Image (cartoon, rainbow, N blue to C red; front, top):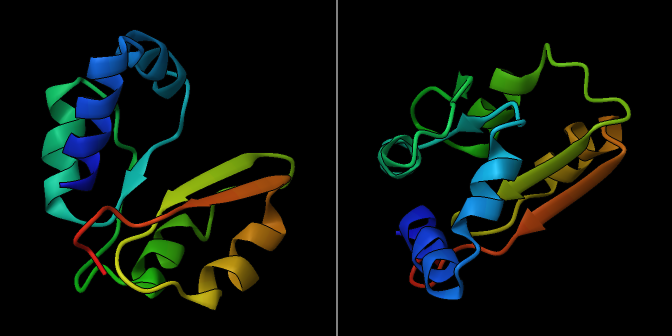
Length: 106
């Protein structure tokens, strides 16, 4: 729902082409199967996938070998916030943003 809702919002604002342009240059990953379907329906490249049970731990493990120093990182949270992300990944990146979880995910 979160990724589909994001695209619904960008569609309604007429900025989906801008978002897709930004995503064309990203190194993308995902944690859960539903966002994968929504991203692939828009032909967004997915480079990394977390393993089950798709928690912050598995997402961080899937990113462990990426050189993030000097890079910007964006994560859309799902459910409760965890400090693991901030401690383990954000400290490696130039900038880190955590988007709030989609409505109904809390």
